[in-house]
Amino acid sequence: MKIKVGLYGTNGHQIQHVLQNHPKAELVAVGAFNKEALPVSLLDNKNIKFYCTLEELLCDEDVELVSLCSPRRKDQAADAIKCLEAGKHVYAEKPCAMSEEELDAIIAAVKRTGKQFHEMAGTAFEQPYLEMRHIVKNGMIGEVVQVLAQKSYPYFDGRPQDEDVDGGLTMQVGVHATRFIEHVAGQRIIDIYAMETKLGNPARTGELRMASSMMVKLENGGIASIIANYLNPRGFGKWGNETLRIFGTKGFIEAVDGGTRTRLVIGDKDMGSITEKQNSVNYFDFYVNSLLDGTPMPFTLEEELHPTRMVIRAKKNAVLVP
Image 1 (cartoon, one colour):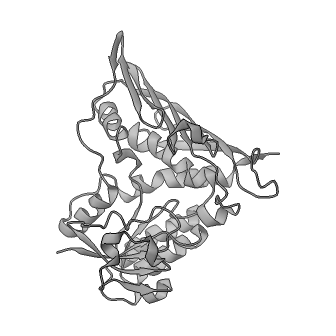
Image 2: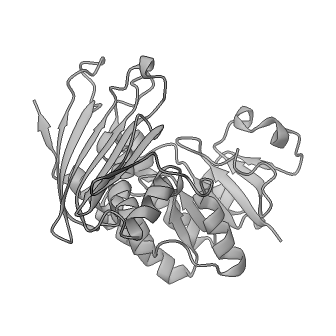
Image 3: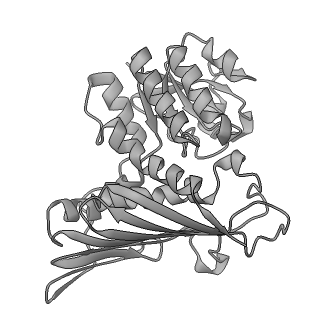
């Protein structure tokens, strides 16, 4: 038995490539989706149906789960609720909502309909962050006191000047950093503040934020700092210039240069690079297994969505530097 999946939109990290030869899920329909975006192995599948609208896709009784990369992120929470109320499970690009009210409405719809909803929240299950998560959970660096999280991507002319299209820098990039803090470092955020700037935006009259800094208070009394920007130069050689550095009472662990270099230091011992004991795990696979055989997800829905809730809160009160 396979979960039958419909794809809606291509505005984000749609999962058509994940569905190639997937052992437990199959693509049966797409909506608002260019056929050319399908991998070659799926182009030849005559059973895939093509629709223009989400409403048409939801009328397809074969579709059991909808993967949402809505054309405008501002509409995605409402789209998710439509899917749930149509009896479909939902897998949504981040941020899945752009206000806490929308986030709460999605959660309420899950409870009301009995259908499952998950965000594309797999940041902590990509290496080396998956191994860092295990090291922290095992107590090797002691109690976490401070975290530094950085996400830097290149600017390109296609970056939306309207934040309603993709959610904007603080929410759509910053959520990876809040997941670093909560899902890798294992520390729940209880307060967060953001400062943003449009300095460096080539479209001088546009609304694109080029950099965002966030200060974070952790539930255990610790603190964290977040840097997010569209300032990663192409010469860096990697799309994402990521840094995650977690300081504990016994030592620290870090991944720098886009996760290509790691280091673990405990007390007076430099342990060098960490050894990744397993491959990255696609979050979609967790979801499919939970649907097919009831295998628990790595997080409760509240734990999964809390990093998103925090960047929504940071954005709502963000200070824009003139």
